[in-house]
Image 1 (spheres, rainbow, N blue to C red):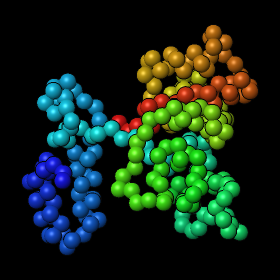
Image 2 (image 1 turned 180 degrees about the horizontal axis):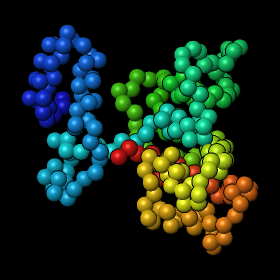
Image 3 (image 1 turned 120 degrees about the vertical axis):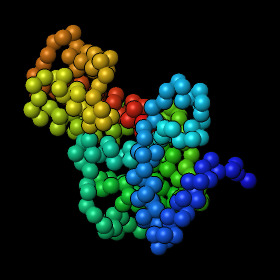
Image 4 (image 1 turned 135 degrees about the horizontal axis):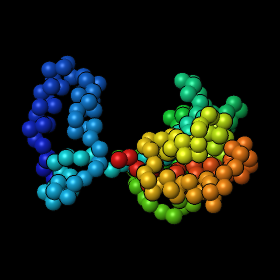
Length: 238
């Protein structure tokens, strides 16, 4: 019922390589993910778009949105709270029913319990698959509740305040250096000139610099982190 493959010769090559390497799925996956095509970014050019607007020939990466698990782990990681403990159960001792279960663990999302009728709010908001049905792929919605969750949820506020506290405890020569570091933490890139101007106006209103240990300075940097987490550049991989 689908369309014809866009790269039949590539499929033949991968199939032959798969057989030659003793039917090893791991080796096949390794060959794919180490290829130049797989490692490209999503930047486009007008000439390329004119030739192949749907990216059928894979001249760039298709832009991908972070799944719910990666969003949760990123919040915890930036705040310095992500528990990297390997293996083992992550369900609270004495749990007999899922109703009212509190998801307070800071371990990686791969260890978060998935109950059929009760999920962490971040999973529900950001299109986690329904545990009651089989899903070949997840939906990818863009609704107001997602932005509102990133703006107002108590967990987000707590993590951004913790991230701001850790940032202010680091040794930096200026607020500009702190702003640059925060962008690298959340967006994996330095701020643009425009972003630096906007962030500086938030951190240093009216050019009045404050003691980095002050409560108002902490709240401003926490707000900066909340702004960065709401950016499309955070929620989408380029």
